[in-house]
Image (cartoon, rainbow, N blue to C red):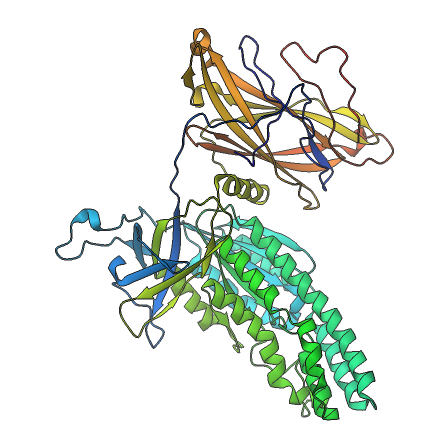
Length: 600
């Protein structure tokens, strides 16, 4: 509870319900929206738990097992696997095998009691497939050549328990089609993408130009200056690309199930400009260029992507769309600079090693040197339909860090692929991630029956509006515990906002006690508790994502609400969104002498 802060409330008439309130609830939201809390007299104190709740979460790890010929191995049991977390053996408590897309529950070993067999899942976890097209490092010609293979892959793998989404990325990401199981909708978007531009062609031309200038250069100093300028620009492109990918991965964190990301690019250089520095060394017979390489090496950045993917449970399959073609690489025979032709191997290694690093670290496959990726994508399809799921209890140390995983087989001669880590998460982090995911992929999961009602916007001056929100929580759905002459419950609220330009606010949380006198408990169970807050909005669309968790039962409801303020209703002038100080509210309205809201 140390991560959750109190905020204002509004009690239903006739109920003796007290709310904990705090000023300074939230900082400015980048998307033009902010939540405004209420100020209160007194000091906010950390609340002790109403009851001791112990929740055991299960970490699920999908493992693909292949023989020496690459054929998927069937018929293994939990007893064949050894699972280690941070080098410590873990007991596999949940296990199932999937063969041909169908669940195969494990049978007890001969002579073993049934209770010693790990519990099987009732069905395989849902599969989420993201087709991620990195236009920053992709030529249109290569991209369009592999689109047919991607369509075939989706055609074979969309089922009732799987959905796919298409995302394009350059300096930011754009969701072109949200998760759906409708193949036609996905193919339609891919057809549109085939007619769009991409950026790798310009980078290839720039590299060829630098190779030419190295050949004509008379001094090593001039050549190094040219290469360093190119390497800095390429490094920036790599950083933007990886930053965008990590941001995209973050949005997937709250999705529950198996998550696959098919990354389509022409490869991303691990060490931007390395082949050019090597060309300088060959021309001038000088190896001093080696001292410049660490400055541009991005190996740790790719490792950060691997850690991010493992933290949110995503397996990356990296498809190099450039295939086997020499086009865009250059050689003496194609009229390109001879230095570029000599660097063919270095160029390929530099761009493909990053794909192998991302795939290997997350349990996926790097699809390389394939002009037609259909067969390789078929191998990916086999991964989705033939695997073993190993479940074990998550650690409860309360820290939020990456845990290393290792899986071993007692049978020799077989190969394994799986995510090499996972993120230990507390309740606060898990729900926060689900709230963020709901901004992009709304979910229908509302066991508490919460609802949101928007009040009439009020001008806050300088072109901004203050939008009242009532969050209604049925008291009959909240678990209350007796405490003397009253019954007490507690809910935790989580808020995040996304604007129409995909700018997201920080996560905001609030704690709220619900107190009901014993004499009014039956009446209260038929009523809603109303939590009141305000949203400071500039003109345009905002999406509010909300979660409400009952502390005692741990039941959590998620809700998204789209809000819109018409530009026609906005006064002239600009405004900087931020926290609006408000006053304690009750069923009788604000107290006398309350300060007027203002933009800080």
